[in-house]
Amino acid sequence: CQTMANLEEGETPEWLRDAAESRGTESNPIISNAEPPPLNSFAMDQAIDRSATRAAGQALGTSQVYAAFLSHALALACMITVGIWVSQDAMGGGGVSWKAGDAKRVFNWHPVLMITAFSFMTIASLAFRSPYRCTSRRSTKIMHGTQWLVATVCAIVALIAVAKSHNDPLSGYIANLYSLHSWIGIAVIILYSCQFIAGVMAFALDLKFITPSMRANLLLLHKYVGPFVYNATAFTILLGIQEKEGFIGCGYHVEEADTVPFVHVLDIPGVCRISHTLGLLILLLAISTSYALHDFEKDNMRRD
Image 1 (cartoon, one colour):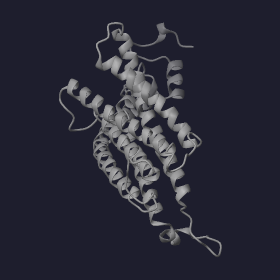
Image 2: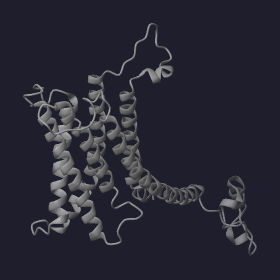
Image 3: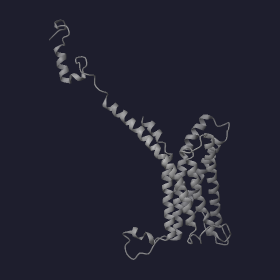
Image 4: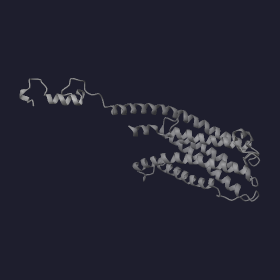
């Protein structure tokens, strides 16, 4: 064995040279003049991933602006389509009425006003996301609350229209709350009412017993429940359209196996094709608005 005393100045012990050769001199800067090892590849991958995620988040943010514009256009299209739908003869003779003995046309107020309410819910939900929103947060909050209030009034009158049409002695009585649509609808209305009341108390009124920490917690809950109620409303509307189509009758006559149903689209009654279109517009509106409202920036922060 070599001892340190027998080594010339600057000479490396043989056993240390052997160890270096077995492991590679690149990993042992003590005995090598090679450059230090590069940045750990895992750390580099993480840095690249974070950079790509931020770029993707910015691109998604831009697309969310377009989604907000699309939602407003779809909301208008839904209101136009429901107006065309209730004007069909199959919808109780077409049009709306508030007269006793005209229950079917009184009922037509229900889909018209519910979809109007849903359209205002869309505008209200996007109040803080719209690219043309007010610069003042207070003004935006007032607009947000006002739009929800308009939606609430429309929904109340729509419910009154159902009760009036079902309990009209001249047209004949109809059972209430017998369908899945009505049960889900009641649940959504309860959630909607809680959301509206909590929003007014926590953010519109300066109530002394609501502390800043309570308000912050309520804001998080408010931001979660709002989109849920919105999408639940869309689902309830689709159930209502399906129920009404069942009364109208949307089937067509076939004399053999209907293996290629798409060729018979024009055999579906026109009133049902309109209601199908309305249902698709409602679905697209819910998807577009949900996309516009999603907080991709928060997702990026969690990944970082």
